[in-house]
Image (cartoon, rainbow, N blue to C red; front, top):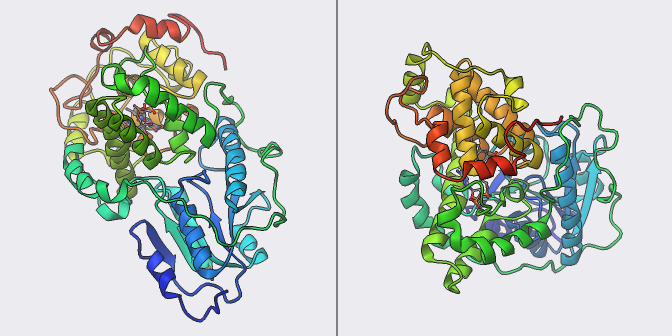
Amino acid sequence: MTDGREIPEELARLAEQARVLVRRAGAPRKGGKCVVYWMQRAMRAVDNPALDVAIAAGNLLGLPVVVFFAVIPNYPNANLRHYHFMAQGLRDVAEDAAERGVGFVLRRHPDHSLEAFLEEVQAALVVGDENPCREPERWRRVLARRLRLPFWTVDADVVVPSRVFGRSYFLLHHFRPHLKMELSKYLVSGTKIAPHYPWKAAGPPGFSVLEDITAGFKGLDRTVRPVDSFTGGTRRALKRLREFVSRELAGYEETRNHPELKGTSRLSPYLHFGNIGPATIALAVQKAVRQGKASAGAGDRFLEQLIGWRELAVLFVRHNPNYDNWECAEPWARKTLVEHAGDARPHRYSLEQMERGETGDELWNAAQREMVETGWMHNYMRMYWAKKILEWAPDPARAFEWAVTLNDRYELDGRDPNGYAGIAWAIVGKHDRPWFARPVFGLVRSMTGASTAKKFDAKSYIEQQGGAGCKLKF
Ligand SMILES: Cc1cc2nc3c(=O)[nH]c(=O)nc-3n(C[C@H](O)[C@H](O)[C@H](O)COP(=O)(O)OP(=O)(O)OC[C@H]3O[C@@H](n4cnc5c(N)ncnc54)[C@H](O)[C@@H]3O)c2cc1C
């Protein structure tokens, strides 16, 4: 046990890793009984650098580790679809934590206070994970001010910790060389760290992961139904990864832009909920390439999406307070869009018409149905979908707002840096360069229905989403 008077040297060294941010410094509580990992973003108990840091700290202090997870009814923009997926994933967390000798306590509103829990279990130190989005980052700052214990957070859901770069980048090819320099340091298989002081079976009371975690949550938006197309959790994520690597990775370069072929990993919901970490995926893909199951080109192309584009999006959200609105527009894009604000818009649709998939564009309606009915949309269709919203909305600011509203409401992977960066790419030229002048879009890259539909079998895609004229049921 620590005597609480000073920070043990090895503990101080643990906190010096680039992945760890010391939000509140100081010596662990004198006579503390455990280390608490406050899990929020990285919902997994395996391959989780935040849990690993908590276990390493526990081992140094001679203390067990307990994971604390709080369910609140008003998580920003979350609805029943998101809570349902999250609840499925928490079952795996509970099982995997128990297997690792780590405690797991789930508490629900109104018994969800982390501060109360820390007192109840006499925590010595708190470790959290990181989340670059506005509200979760604010929670961490508030806690750091209020807690009387050391509080560290760990950047657990990126391959290279964002602090290593300390800035955002205009374009992927600006970011790529910096990323390349760091990858070999961070993309390595971790050794599994085991707690030297396992958590005793009888812990503090909590809510069972088998019960309905949303029961009694008044005000929760229950209008967006859970979907069968994805089941949350680490086990499902790992299964999907194995399937992708053995079946689809080899053809990824050729099929990734074909929405009618299921050629991509469909791991984005699992990444969003932290059911799987990007390093686990990247290492599995690298292994498959080494074993000759896929070409180096396919592996590189996939890793460019998973690490290049994804971590570029995380840096954008971290460093741009307007990441989810039109104010994040690149100056050139803002100028050109303002200049074209008065251009005739041959078709205009309201947010409600778009939400119901009732536009005159069957390809767009099919994409909207894919999102509403399955909780996921193919990347190529997401690009087209958002470009059309820019064309049909009254102005670019509203186009941005409407795209965020629909994306965050229906996508299982919505409310994510990737979503904000993707919408900013499509509507306000983020991470893109000026293109050729077109009405409404100005120099922002446009996509037309005719040219998009020629690049893949659009007819087959529309058929898969119920066919032309198919209506969404709400
Ligand atoms: C308008 C628009 C909205 C988007 N909204 C979201 C969103 O809400 N959530 C989300 O996770 N992604 C979003 N994306 C990015 C991308 O479309 C999805 O990540 C991808 O389609 C997920 O499918 P997948 O897992 O099969 O991807 P794969 O092709 O298998 O790629 C593997 C992983 O790489 C990452 N990735 C792939 N493409 C991109 C990209 N363009 N930008 C950043 N990361 C990428 C994702 O984490 C993805 O899971 C959006 C893109 C656009 C253009």
